[in-house]
Image (cartoon, rainbow, N blue to C red):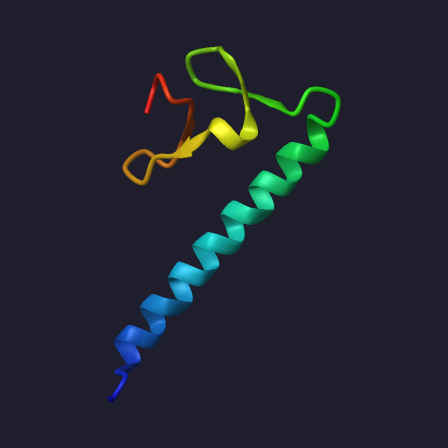
Length: 66
């Protein structure tokens, strides 16, 4: 099985995006330690584990908005 350079670059981008998302979640949890909730674009406070990442717009949305 031969992996092309393009596939390697794509894999690096995917891992990089996943790392950015993990850091964003970590920072959000640290900033919101007292509640554990995040503010959705619809202005609802939602627990971080109920937020979804939209790959189209790049935002983190609650169940209702996603």
